[in-house]
Amino acid sequence: MSETNKVPEIKKQVVFDAPIEKVWKAVATSDGIAEWFMPNDFEPIEGHQFYIKSQFETSLCKVIKINPPKELTFSWGEFGWEVSFLLEAIEERTSFTLIHSGWGEPDETIPGQSRTYLTTRNIMNNGWDKLVDNGLRKVVEEE
Image 1 (spheres, rainbow, N blue to C red):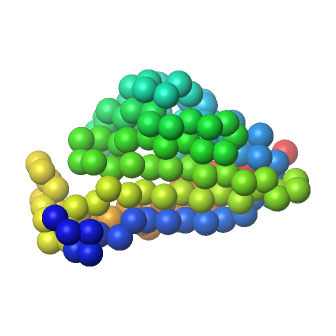
Image 2 (cartoon, helix red, strand yellow; image 1 turned 180 degrees about the horizontal axis):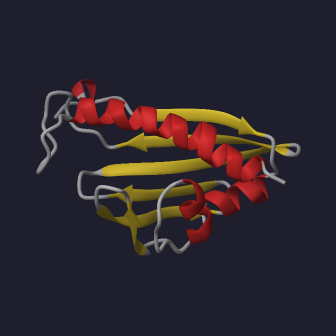
């Protein structure tokens, strides 16, 4: 599979009106992740395997990298997906970048699914918009 034929990563960049510590707590603790994303048994330890539970399925994940309060990367499910949360303090605000990578070829069907990687990526791209811009923003910008 050549890199040029792969489905492009999803990338979301936003600035939250919240300090980096508050955003980190929302994206790198089990309770925080459950509040805006999905129920889980996450622990902030490299190598820790955990589950996230969507309305459709429960997926095995693994913490690949954790560098508080700036980066969390984890594998998601069995399809080679990786999700990274990157944080940068900007005075009392936080720049937040989400990257969802590891997609296959556009016309390749996901194993055990009826959709292609490209279709799934586009559906998840819209989902990440709502999760980050609405869900996570509400959690970190609330008083």
